[in-house]
Image (cartoon, rainbow, N blue to C red; front, side):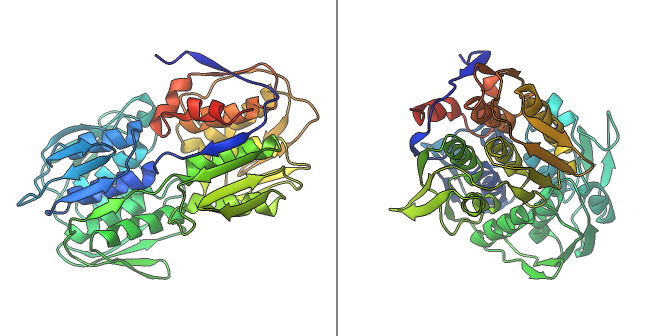
Length: 419
């Protein structure tokens, strides 16, 4: 049983090796798309995160799916028949928004719901897009938020325009459902955010036999049929980022094995960011190796890489000078209000952080003080606070079990690299 709080050892240096968990973003997309292929599929190396397990349970409502080791096997079926009813997505906004688009394609009523954290989050811009494609949308509790009732019907194709300043999920959801339309669908993504995640969606769709084409802001998805396949899930750069930043703040060394140098993940950009601010980053014997500490402050636009903000904010505590993160306003729609939560934590340990309209500024100090940090149930904040605690004596992180959402083995993995 997980403790209610974890004490972070002050003054330790990172010196070790680490194998990241699988990318939950990649796995969730692969499982959902595999469930829409009539042929059988094998999605390998999915890991044990709560969000991936939740998606597998959802898919099991309409497909014969079993877990074999670290893989999911989905068996062939004559036709796809998604039952009506209530679908519990837990805290997974990714699953919820993907299902929202998919369910608007099928006749009958389906309700998408989740836990308290999901109910605080908006459904997103997919609402108007789904309505324009003929779906009937109702909100049983709070307008614009989960739970949401979806009565759909098979899309006739054509063109749909979508603009979402808070998430890429709505765009990705439309792309995943689009091949089931009666005709080709053109998705016009207006000022898209987190666009690398949209590219990831398109890459996974291609693995299952449907190739979307991009023309400027237009994404053209042909009517077609997903084909069953075997797919290996990538190791997660988002998880690796916390270990890379922990190494840099302690002037240590980390070797991370299992990542792809040609990854489809947007967060793979963390390696270049560390190198840019003075860390020694290289690939050696199929491992990403990071040594040394930062010699410059960070200047980061988070528009496409919001999940890197928590580890980079921890890294900023050790960067000389004033680090600036832009595009932070949308972080308030995450699990915990990530921008304000990070500012609060930095100030709690004696650092200097302030939040502007769409930016967070962090300045380092000579010495940090210990504090009790509450991640507000947010897995990425809990991991970032662990990195911060390496710099602040007697720091404690509450609710450590929330890391199960994406990285169940985070705490033993983290303590294993400290010397």
